[in-house]
Length: 184
Image 1 (spheres, rainbow, N blue to C red):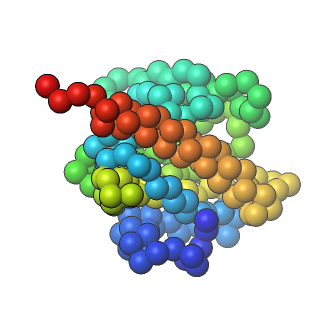
Image 2: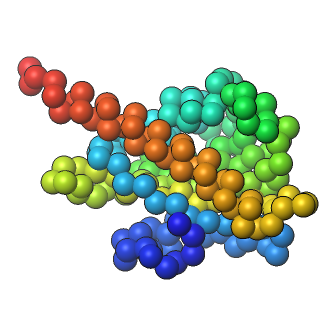
């Protein structure tokens, strides 16, 4: 989903507070929403791992972080074959464990995502009577020469949707294990 149409009041408030991108003329930007049937602390335990995005991102085969895990840290990500890239260098821009917000900027790699920046935020929500998570992810990126803004947004949104579906699958599987384990 992009733009402000179709968002609930909670979603609009989360976007307003945490997802303020101001795209330049040659950039596109979008916001995607995913509801996950797992509590925020569980989902956050996966999202916050800047050093292990492959735990839920299916297109990443390997990740190596340079130095300590802190704002400004760089990671070298190897992308699985089949995509038009093999590597990406990414910088941790924000990691807020209290507000559950992670921001990453791509600073290099053999792909066409120039000036890419993303923000992902997690918000508590009751889903089917259980603690759940509203995930909001937004991005801004340059539109590569030879592509339209719509084409660029479509490609990036498709990758993010795959990542968010995988995040939901992994989180919900872990949540079911937690809910079905006997109390000691």
